Length: 502
Image (cartoon, rainbow, N blue to C red; front, side):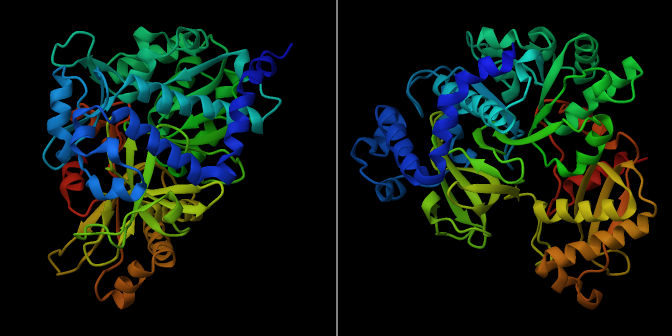
C-alpha cells in the first residue's frame, strides 16, 4: 500500500480550503483582522489603541501607527523579561533572533503559541498539502524529511524561555509524531556550531531513506556536499534514491539552481519555494509551472502594503490586499498573533496576479543600490546574474554588491564581489553581460549608464573560495537563517569582505 496516498487523505480538507483563495481572499483577510483584534483587545497594546471599538479596516489604520522594530522594542523587552498581555495575550516564551537594525545587532521577534500553530506550522502543513495535490504519485511519507535548523539559547535565564533561530524554535516545539518522520535527531539539529553540525547531520542521515529536504539553499548545499564527500558518490540519488522534493526559502534560489541540478540529477526531483521568515509564514509556491508564490491569506497574518515609490515619505499611501496592483513594488506590513501590529517587515514584494494573489519577493527595503538614482533592487540583480551565468557557464556560490562613489580617477560604478562555484569563461565578459542585462531589466540603471556619464561599467571582483563562509563565521552567523546582504547602498559589508579577500 502507498503510505503517502493513505496519509495524504488527511490533507484533503485543507486542499479544498486553499481553493477559496481564488475567490474569497479579501473576505478571508477581513476575518483575520477581526479575529486578531478580538483576541488582543484585552492586552496593554489593544487597550491603548482601542481595539474593542474598532469596526473597520479604516478604524484600524487610523488608530494604529505603522511600526518598526525600534518602535516595539521596549514592549518586546518587557515581554522577554516575563510580562504577560503586552502585545499579545498571555506570556510569550519564544523569541526568534534575526538580523538587527541600525541601533541593534539583533532583533528578537515574539513567537507566541498561537503564532506557532496558526502561522508557522500552518505554513508547513500547506507546503505538504499543495505538494501532494500537484504530485499524486508521490511517496513523500515512505521515508524521512531532512530539516535543517539553527540553534537556541536561554532568554534572560527566564524559566522555559528561549531565543534562537526560528527553525530551532519550530524543531523544538514540533509535534512528537513529526519527529518520527524527521532527521536528524533533535540534539544534532539544534547544535550551535554549524561546521560540527554539518558533519554530524551528514553522517547520521547517509543510511536513512530521505525523501524530502527543507531549509535555506546555501546551508543545505553545504550539508549535501558533505554527504557526497563522505559517501564518495557522484549524485544524491545514489545516496537517497527516493529523494523527490526540496522546500526552500530564506534566500533566492536562482544562484543555486544549477548547483542543485548537478548534485541531484533525477528528473523526478521537485523544488518548492516558500516564504517563511522569523516574523511569519507568508507564501508557498502552489503551482509548479508558476515561479511566484501564493500569499497565505487565512493564517493569523493581516497584510498591508506601501508602494515603494512612496516609501520613506512622511505620510505614504498604505493599502490592504484588495488595493494592490500587479507589477508594482511594495513594502509589506503585517499584523499577527505574535503581537506585531502594522509592522514593517523589511521585505519588498511584487504581485504577479490576483485570485489567487501570487507574488515574488523583490528584495529588502534596506538592501538596494540607489547611490546615483539607479534604484537597483535584489530582483534585478538575481535576473541579471542568471543571464550572465547562462552566457559564460558560471555558477555563483555567493555575492554582494555596493557602489564605488568615486575612485582615484573620479569614476563612479557598481562593484560586485562574487564567489563563483564555477568560474566564468571570462570574468570581463561576465561583467559585460551582467551590465547589459541590468540595463535591459532596469531603465533607471540604463539611464545612469548612458554614455558612461553618471555610472561607468560595473566591476566584478572574484572572491576567494569560502570568503563569505569565513565572513559569516567571524560574525558568529554560520547556519540557521543567516544570509549575506546582496545589495547595499553603503560600502559597510563589501569593505569588510574585501579586507578578508586575501
